[in-house]
Image (tube, rainbow, N blue to C red):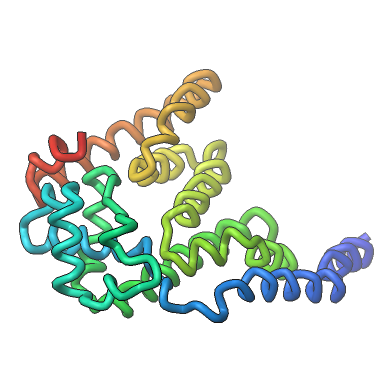
Length: 236
């Protein structure tokens, strides 16, 4: 019986599947191989907003004109890109609690902060995938999804949100308190708050709901104390 289980486990890691995944990764990377100047475009607005928060002007990050001036001051080359920011703005529209993540990153130079951001969210994503399906082939499949590389190249936040959602679903039954904390961390993507509470209430996940509510309140209090209560007014 053990031999059969072991055979099935190895059978799932088919070399042909691995080759197909590597080809998919190559296809995903190919369109960006000749254009590296746009790397980290979306992350630049995160980093710029974080620098403003560190300087004590977090609320001003929601004003694109002021954020743009900050980016040009710290990264003069951005207006020489193929799609310059003065023509294609990237405003900051995330909730103030996100400053708790962005401010520490803003203490680093932009290239290092971008690498740290990318490595952290990719690690979270792969950790969740491995927890769902502990097979090397599953990790390859996760990496072979074209949106993953697109997210990594531009420095977006969708990969982190996906990792949190996966972690919430994984821990909802066995570790509801941890699931509640992960739900609270997902507050930086408030659009998920439209549907998720109804699902939790309908399924009676009261431990997760109470934990999430308390954790969200704690995050909001910490944000207000750290960056000023006017950040919430500016966000709204």
